[in-house]
Amino acid sequence: MAESMTDIVKVKNIVKDFRPGFGLVRKRVLHGISFSVRQGEIFGFVGPNGAGKTTTLKILMGLIHAQGGSASILGHDISESEYRRHVGFLPENPYFYDFLTGEEFLDFYAKVSGVSAQERPDRIASLLEQVGLAHAGRARLRTYSKGMLQRVGIAQAIVHDPDIVFLDEPMSGLDPIGRKEIRDLILRLNGEGKTIFMNTHILSDVEMLCHRVAIIVEGEIRYVGSSEEFLASEERSADVVLARLPADAVQIIEERFSAPMRGQGDQVEMRIPEKEVKDLLRLALDTGAEIVSVTPHRVSLETIFLSAVSKGPRQDQAKEESR
Amino acid sequence: MISPTRVGAIAANTVREAIRNKILYVLLFFGVMLIGIGIFVSTLSYVESDRILQSVGLASIRLFGAAIAIFVGVGLIHKEVDRRTIFTILSKPVSRTEFLIGKYIGLVATLWMQVAIMAVAFLVVSLISHAPLDSGHAAAIWLAAVELSVLVAVATLFSAFTTPMLASLFTAGIYLVGHVTRDLKELGAQSEVVSVQQVTSLLHRVLPDLEMFNVTIQAVHQLPISSSEIWMPVVYAIFYATVLLALGSIIFERRDFR
Image 1 (cartoon, rainbow over the protein chains, first blue to last red):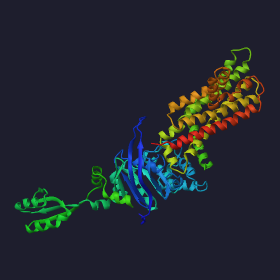
Image 2: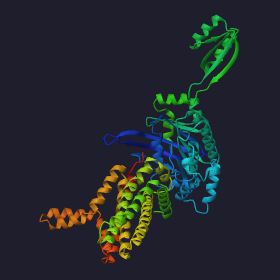
Image 3: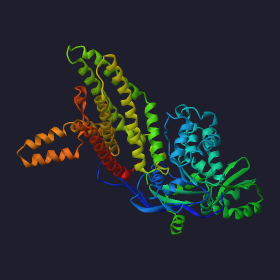
Image 4: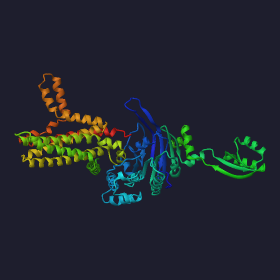
């Protein structure tokens, strides 16, 4: 990631209501959300289904209108169309004009994006090469597999060489090979200096790719920041394995650290807060036990996610909003 | 600022989609076939067989053109939204107005190509039957094509905010009413009730006067067609379609694509 702290996407107090069916009652789907995306990062916008991820992305792309708040991309308010010269977008489960060949498809998007006629042939050839579809450029899109469509979709998103690429559930419905190809493509684009904004609910992809995340639940931002920062804010724990611990020491230790011990053979294991590890080891050595291993317990993003879903907004969000 | 390049790209893509769509060929086939059937229909009469042949031919061009305009036109925007292709297009520096105009021009161009093919069929059938041909027939076909540009604008307006089913009903309704607004106005003028006169006059002004584009009778009977009967409908069509597209654009601009 480029070491820059410039915020190139700024979202402030966005509110969106929908009117289900023909009723007069409005349902609020975004409750004044705020976050920002920094230049050069891969930003994960994470949340369960129906949390408001796609709605937020569509507001940023000018496809739906917010009732309140403001948003800017690269310094342009999203009500202007100027910023769209600098952004690329791949919607969720995209359908493309399947009567077109890969080359015709990219040529069409290059034309509407303002790529000149002289540049287009080389640009299209290099894009097809970049997404691994050079062999399929003359085939109609209706013959493409889902993974190929997703890759040609990313190609159309970057056909005009944008600074920031918005991807809505880019791994959705792909097999492991397809997901790896898209992951590699995202990393390559980020390596070329493009900022990536990615909507997803696949947490393993977020852990592997994203520098920072925002967690959205029921139209409210519950967390914005790096996963490392979040992990640091969680109470860390460690798994300690001891051998030859005297029987009377087991009860003393369990009472002292308020944690159960699981035994197997002459070894016992217990999970305790990281800050108490030293005390436990000292006590265990005093009783003549042997220390087999101390393994820091890593909190997964899934744990963070579930914790964010169950809790209210965190303080980190307030910090982000006040920036 | 509307970019001709972007509008042109969207229009060209719409034409390409139509050309690769088999349903259009089926409709076109039936249109051409009906023109050909005119040969057999004309043999039913010992007198005026040429006129019957050409009446059937010109009516086929107008009816099949209208059918294609309505059924393809109403799905114009809906299909793009339904299949989410509009998401990627509008995320580019393309305004919604450019998109709407591009789709409109694309469909009008497609329809004009269909009319041209049916016109060739009409020409061939007339030559085979030794029916007379003159500039009146060309004027009738030209005005049928111009009428379709108004009908597509109506379909585009409705497809900008409603479902294809409703849009096709509304457009077909406007097409039918559009052919009687002139008669309605004349009937209203004969009424002694002022409000009836005002309502029929208002309907004539607001709804399209599609009979303006119908010179079939003059063409078939080889009656003279004045130049104003040709250029006035063109000016009217440009004005009417522009107003409808502007209205459609305002509605389209406010729409959420969920």
